[in-house]
Length: 150
Image (cartoon, rainbow, N blue to C red; front, side, top):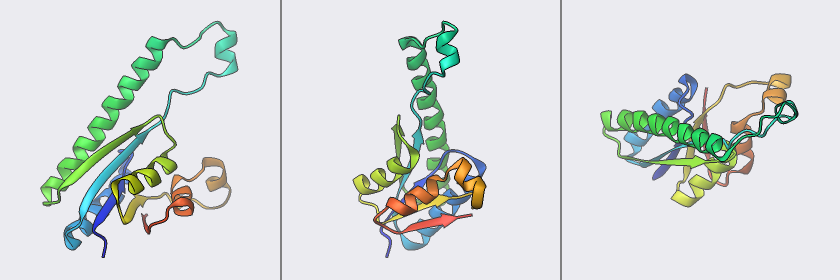
C-alpha cells in the first residue's frame, strides 16, 4: 500500500507523536522512510531594529544558519535513532530557508513518497487563523495522502 513514507518533524513533543506513529506504520508495512525537518530563513529585520542602527551582518546570518543546521542535525539524528531501534531504515532530509508546508510537500515529491505523516495541534477557529497551520497547508497542497496525528 504505502511503500515510501515521509515523516515530518520539528523536534517538538507533539511532532514526536507523529514520528512514532509513522515509524510504527512503516514497520508494519515494510515501507521505506524519509524523515524531514525544515528550518526557517533568517528573520526579516523589524523597522525598530533598523532605525536603532542595528543591521544584520553577513556574520549574523551565517551564525544563524549554522545554529539552524546544528538544530536540524540533532533532530534528525534522534529521529533516525528511533527508527533504528524498531528496525526501520530511514533517510533524513534537512530543508533550510523554507516555508515548512511547501518544503514538506516538495520533499515528498522529490523523494518519491506516497504518504506524508505529520502531527497537528488540532487548533480550530480563531486560534488556527491567528497561529496558522502548516498541516492545513500540507493537506491543501499535497497530491498524495496525508496522515495527521493528534
